[in-house]
Image (tube, rainbow, N blue to C red; front, top):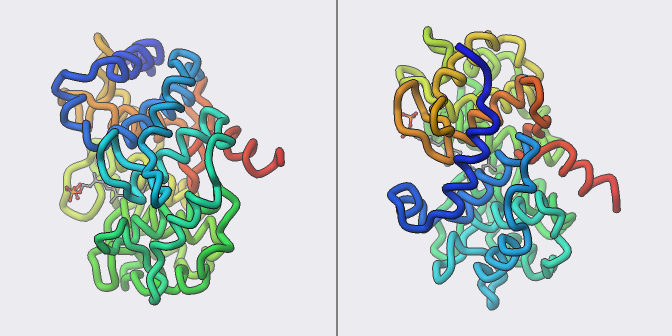
Length: 314
Ligand code: GRG
């Protein structure tokens, strides 16, 4: 089967970054900030972040900031949202350029989206989702400003989204889904609140996500998808149950989703590749300590050396 095509994946990511008018670029036009985070983190995990023009990326990121409220948009001329603000902060963290930020302005924007019950809205229009709780908590932690929110209420809200199967949903009573579980477990890990998780119950639900083909799905009865290699494995690592997964079979599933000619990774074998699945495939392999890749932090979704630089070199 062969191994990971590091060079080809790096070339694929750089080519997507350069193109602005092909199908894939147009599809993600409105969420290019997320695309920048997926692509640059992939390059960094592959030890190839030097392949991009960091100054150009930093000035584009800063142009996407709404100068009034301090939040970041998915692209130039779009509206700010927590989903893009976390990616902007993560991209600047990767490039070691957090110094360009007005930290108080950005953290005030994020903290201002907390509601009375501890939940977070994604933007001024008010949709609530545990994805936004994670974005806010991860972002504020990276900026050293968690003290700007009511952490106890934020944690209690996340705990109110816990289900009888041990998983978490997007709102209280919402179906357990691996993506939301990553958000809730990640936010609980960052705030030192993992005692709210029933590790065995959740670990069992998560390891049942492994399908016959070795890949992981996001909830019962669904097809495996490379991206769940990240959402499921990172959660299992945070609750110390990753040894309940067959890593060899999962590694083979991810490697089978590579485009071995042109680079990139798809959701399932023989499908079209994209930056999202390329990132989560490489990140999943990094969580399984695939040789030659940088190690990624399961809670912050950034390379461990980047997280250490932020927290240990002040
Ligand atoms: C920094 C890594 C990182 C994330 C930021 C936005 C966010 C926080 C997390 C998103 C979590 C999430 C909900 C992921 C799931 C994404 C996904 C593939 C959804 C597809 O849902 P369905 O219902 O697919 O279309 P299934 O697989 O259930 O059929």
